[in-house]
Length: 256
Figure (spheres, rainbow, N blue to C red):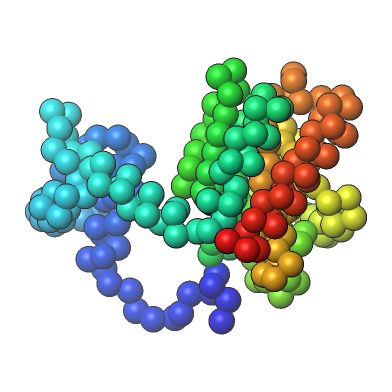
């Protein structure tokens, strides 16, 4: 069974409620019990009991403005990231790549059919977007994601691409046949472009991280505004730098 296909078993409602609170606090920054109860569609007493349990366990903190996620999640996130050997193999090379290009770089792995960034680095003048470490993205909307899809096993790719392809901008590829043609081009040239397909005004160049022993491990990309990512610099020079970095990371990932 593919990782993206969950087992058809009953879920635990109380667990769903607790994690619903966690995700709501992530998006709201702070919230009161009434806000939480309304958002989740539960009684105030149910919301209160769950929140107080999360406070007791250290995952939610009380503030002057209500309840907020605790910094304990930083510890969990760091442990989750560090278990991936690719993080250690890629970090130094990505730092050098971003220094050379002067924008923002990211390392992505695939988990449960979506891409998640395990490392990100940027220069002082790089444009900050909603992309950050731990952020999940639809693979067909990004250069890193398309790089991964182009080089992963066909069975895995088919499992990931089940269902509709969401449109995030007018440039997002939403037709399956068009996407498959794009992936053929990426396999041929060894790199992928993201031309305002996830965020209007932003471009990216990605390449797969491939191990001789383990196949495609993930992907890397560099991204920046269309005002700077253009011309030969964007179409030819950056791809060569990104592919070279990806090859080095792949070698390190093979033997780490």
